[in-house]
Image (cartoon, rainbow, N blue to C red; front, side, top):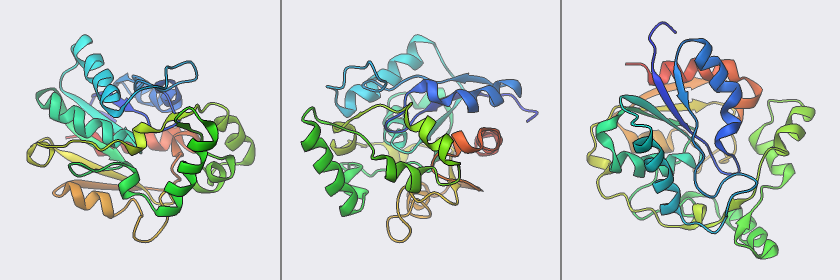
Length: 244
C-alpha cells in the first residue's frame, strides 16, 4: 500500500461505525486516513425511529462538517443504499465508490425489493414480534449465513456487538434520480464465500456489479463479515478496490 488515500467507511445493517476498528487499524498503519461515521439510527443507544433519508442526511452532514474531499467512499451491505444517495448529494467530493458485497439499488427500490421472499418474511415476523419497528438478526442466520469463516467464539463475540436495525432502512424506497449518470469511478468488491444473500438469482455477485457497469471488480476470500475474520485481508483489498 504505497499510495495514501482517505477512506470513508459506511457500515452495514446491525452495525455501527465503531465495528470497522480492526479494518481501520490496518488501513491507518499503512498510512491511510480513515473515517467511520455511524449512520443515523444505528448503535445500541441510538434513536431507532428514523427513515432511510435520515440515514443519508447523517452521512452527508458528516462529510460536509469535516470538509472531506477526494476520498474513497466504501459501503458494506446495507451501506450501499446509503452511499449511492450520498454520491448524488456530493459527487464532487468523492474520488471513487467501492461496494463491498453491498446493495446497488435502482431508482425507487428498497432492500426488501431485491431480497429473497423468505428473508422478507423472516424480517416481517421479527418486526411484528418486537413491536418497535426494528429487526434483529437471529444468531443462527448470523453464524451460518454471515460469518461461517470464523470460529464459534468469534461468531458469538461479534454477534454481541450488533444492535437492532430500524426496519425502515430495509423497507423504504430509495429515490436515485441521478446515480446512473454520475461519472464517479466505481468498484465492486466480492467476498467469494458470502452467502448472506443466497447463491443463485439473489447472490451479491454478479447481480449488483452488473448494475455498476462499467466498474472495476475485485475478488477476495471470505464471508459477509470478513471484516472480523480477516480484517488485514479486507484492508488490503479495500486499497486495491479504491486505488486509482
